[in-house]
Image (cartoon, rainbow, N blue to C red; front, side, top):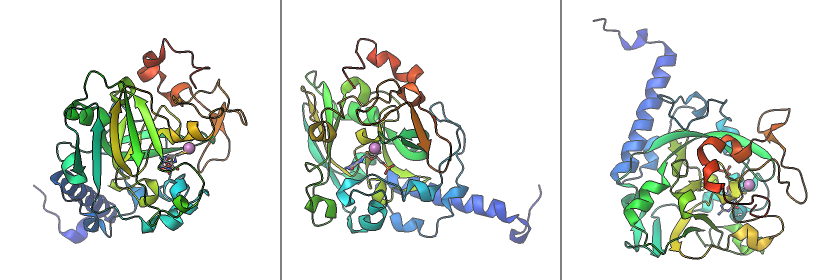
Length: 310
Ligand SMILES: Nc1nc2c(c(=O)[nH]1)N[C@H]1C(S)=C(S)[C@@H](COP(=O)(O)O)O[C@H]1N2
Ligand SMILES: [Mo]
């Protein structure tokens, strides 16, 4: 067996190894209960991130650079502009963090985030993400299936929907000191959507903890729906019989519905949804039905009129 001295190793391998170790440390820390964000200081550049192997849900499209994913955001709690969240979100305190589980569920409680995450192994999921404003990105999220958590929480037979609520903290979130939206931000899914293996809860991207502007420390990712379904900085998960009154549908019911499935055939009243701009690209591309996930999720909506239920 060939033993190489450290200075024989090409620098590209050293970088990969460092990145790998950092990722492992994060995953271990996250799943062992101590979200040791500081262990990641000095992590290698996210652009050099590589998945270990491609999973069945991963797209092989080109990843959107880390800097775009973390500086072009919608998170109205930190302001209405795309560059407001990355400028303003450092005031969000993500430790300690707890999540209240309530409603039609057998294990209602307020869980410390570490305890909520403990049973799960974090996975990388490379998803397309399509905003209702016709831009899109490709992101390697780090997370676990929402359905795995729901099974552990044991909803009752009355639970038909699950609702997600963002932190309400005007002292930390300057956008909440303004009348931009009804606060706190609320979203929801039908139970069968929530149980679909594509729907995940994310704690990181590019193998690193979520930046605050991307919804730290816990956010939803539902890749076949417009981005506004993906509630950020979640503090409450509620199981219920009635359909949640999601924030954007309350704010502008003609423009935003409950389902928000990506659909190139149903235009927003003020713009077309047929095309989208992938951040970093010049030419627009065609938007795909269910954001390209039609084979996986189409059957969830076979009895639904998607023009009425947009
Ligand atoms: N609490 C909260 N969650 C939110 C939003 C928001 O304004 N507040 N914006 C949504 C919208 S419109 C999109 S497109 C995505 C953006 O996620 P990203 O910044 O990680 O790309 O977050 C969603 N989740
Ligand atoms: Mo969005």
